[in-house]
Amino acid sequence: MRIYQDNDKRELAAVVCNKCKKNLKVKNGVIMEGCFNGNIRFGYFSNKDGDVHSFDLCEECYDKMIDGFAIPVEEEEVKELL
Ligand SMILES: [Zn+2]
Image (cartoon, rainbow, N blue to C red):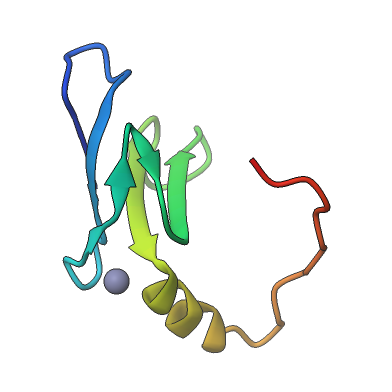
């Protein structure tokens, strides 16, 4: 869950893990630790036609989620990080 300082959602104030309620470190509007941001708009052929869901997971909860996958996540190393 993301909390913004302004109504335009430009200035990120806080990020809370939806699973465990951990407050993630945010400094000057930037998340300073691992965070999974899920964001999906369900389409016409789903049972949630047009619904938009979004959530955040801390890295620990993300790791627990992917541990339950029958097929491991695809991994790729990115050389340049922001
Ligand atoms: Zn968590």
